[in-house]
Image (cartoon, rainbow, N blue to C red; front, side):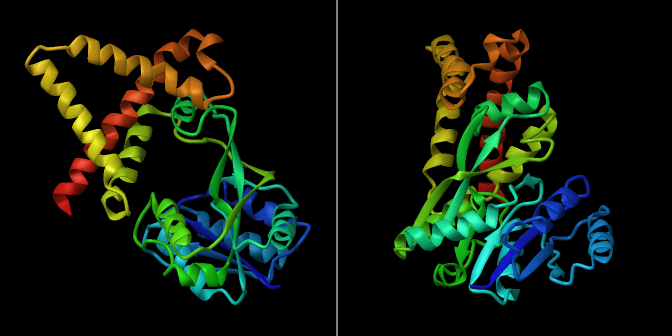
Length: 303
């Protein structure tokens, strides 16, 4: 069965070559690799063109989408593909050389429509590790949508991914899959890893990332999460203004957000080894929540 690999990219000059080499050495070679340019302004396209020329890689094709959202770029790649199976991968992920082969074998053996893998997250520096501890979990293997092998028909039956979004499109798509009785399984034998920064290596960039991701939340199927975030901070700020239970609420929040959540998500308790984590982990948790609230509110106003 023919397989097309779809790779959306936007300003990935630091990691694109590693991703290309990972595909070039796959034990099961795909029939085509579609690299979808979301409107990069750096040298990513130049690096890709030079790499294709050097390797004489005729199955590698670049498609210009220019819409600056990964979900729309994935849709573009799927529509251009000529195969019955789609292997989707993000730039910045390191994939094992048996990624396609093992997922294809798993799909046939278990007769499912989608096979996903796990991502192993660690981090580059203290800030990156702290963000990871608050989101995926440090040194944890978490099921992820990037790296999935999908039947093209399953994507078409669900009406493709939610367009023009940077985040939550995977959650929305998998919800539609469940509604259409499209089956998905996790192949835990295949693990992906990030190349370089796992989440963000600075507090400012982390805040910008969370803010931009939060702008799409009202477009997805569930409004519960943004509503709960906004209500919680409204109650917290109200307790401060009216001077009731503010300290108790604040300390409870910092305890849960700063330590209990990352300790629960992570396989290793980072802050027991380095005093710096005692400071950065709760700070990153607070930044994540505040950036989400501002993103939710901003999106609600402008949309």
